[in-house]
Image (cartoon, rainbow, N blue to C red; front, side, top):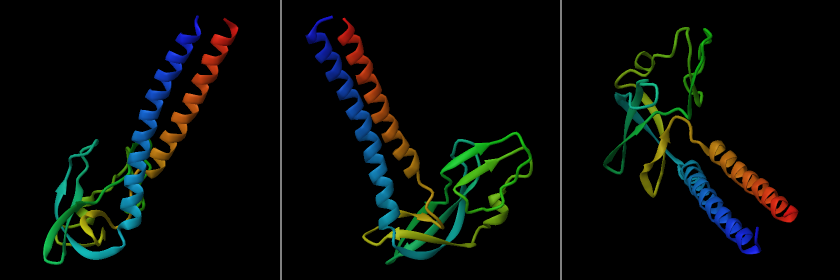
Length: 166
């Protein structure tokens, strides 16, 4: 194989992995921004339930008011984990929702319509925030960035070995 082919493959790999890395980094920065800039808090009220998630679990929709404007935020979980055991979730505010063969959390019974919940929001952009605790995917995006760089470096080593032997 020629030197031109080596540089062409290296360029394409670099471009693809730079795009992947930039996507992970952008999502990571967005999550960090939500987490760090949501410094103000207000009491909101559960007004509905939303089951538009991967397991059709009813999650509370909390309405809150900032400077006369009304906003709505969903109480969310970072992960939904299915298990075949009869394990139960003890903490409603855990970041992971455990869906097991045993008794699962019924948020409709725990967070009744009209019940208060704390909303943390960004004072300059009140529509950005989270309910009760931050449940974002910062760790997921960080792992994605590390894996992207690791795979890229591994492929570069393989590419160098292939072209060095030839």
